[in-house]
Image 1: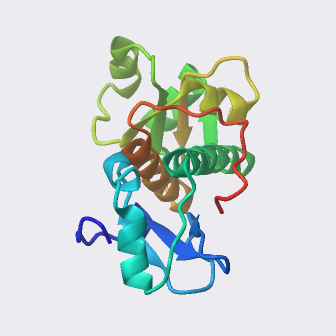
Image 2: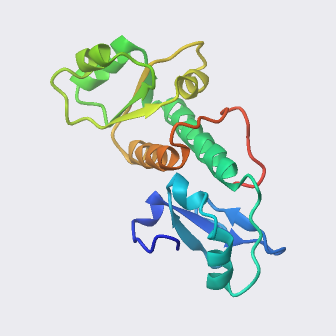
Length: 192
């Protein structure tokens, strides 16, 4: 809506207007009503004329919360963490260097999640010979919380729908976060 760029809907952010004229972020893209799509980028969700653009598109007054970008970022962070937890509970994700290495060398890896502060040398050792495996960086605490550990650096997700969804959620998160890492324990009230 702001940039006039077209992308796949799962890579964008959907907004709907609530009954009171407030903008609601529909991260799962399931809420009823006419949706508006935004690029998942920080500069777009912080655009000063976002409310005006939405009002023009919807032909009615639209209210944006003051902390709109923060709400979007927290919602995306929650979706990434929930996706990691879901993959773990479904038995499609493992954590720990050796378990990850075994899945990678066995050809059972669809996505490698790597904590932000992980060593590049150790990552190269983990991937040795498997450079085509997608690698997404996530905040370390996302992995630690999802796997119920004090610290987790790597996780591997089996190929399939969960790995694809998690990769897309990570891309959307980093597009909006740009280094701002909200606390994953905070569940925003306005974001679906």
